[in-house]
Image 1 (cartoon, one colour):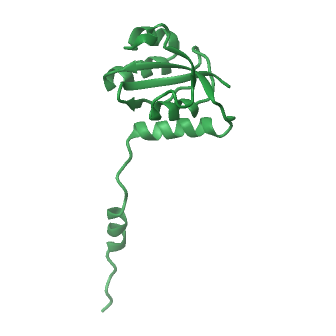
Image 2 (cartoon, rainbow, N blue to C red):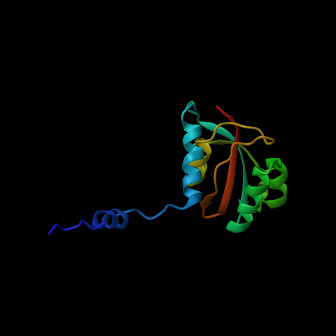
Length: 137
């Protein structure tokens, strides 16, 4: 009278699975991890951003850039701050930006407005930012 094994081990394994991470956070880590590997230390960056109060508007802007539109043109259309003229904030030093923005910006490889290397959406008390860096020093 042999007892058959039930699939109880499978059930326990499935119950221990961690909750899924938000796709946005995963994209941010992947993008920033790619940039960090070969970056030299910098004290200042030439940064552009697009700031949107609403997540949906920021995602729409991100899709346009990923679809091939220039960062500066999308910034003029979507950004809701004083950097509307192409999103340029100019040269910014470490310590002059809010924490999450600074962390994302200093992790990015320099790129150009026609082929930008982007952060994923970065949430700060100002809203949602899409960030690109044009230079480091």
